[in-house]
Length: 61
Image (cartoon, rainbow, N blue to C red; front, side, top):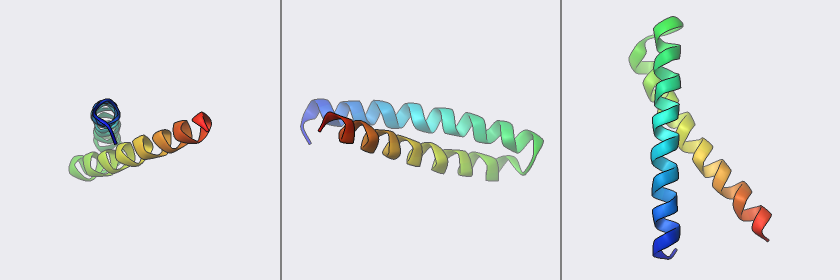
């Protein structure tokens, strides 16, 4: 992994965690405990970033 790929991954990870955490907190406000919503949102955001990177990598081939 070269430096540009690493930087792109870090930026995508920050975005995914931020968006996932925000959605999780909103879910926590309405449906469950806020901490549980935040953690589930962060986990979901992390896996969303990994899935998106895998799809993009497959399309480049």
